[in-house]
Length: 127
Image (tube, rainbow, N blue to C red):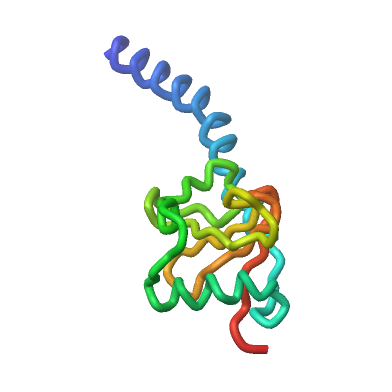
């Protein structure tokens, strides 16, 4: 009987020690709730073009368009891996892909980043 009591006590201690780790992992999901919005009409013309390509499923001009976006910084609402995909928004005068991207989950859930994922705006359809 004494061994069972000791085992329960150690189990309780172990669970209490793990609690701060669980809370630390979950704080990222709340940070993404503050993403601002931007209307489609406010996007640069190149971003509107990319959004139309996404809705038509291509063809896309860059080989990396459509790859899985990892959301490692937890800037977007947390989803399972493979939910988000990234697409290049052409940057006039850039010799490479530039810094502008659109990241989409299930369309129309799309986000615009003008600074290579440092900040995001949820794209708002309509007015």
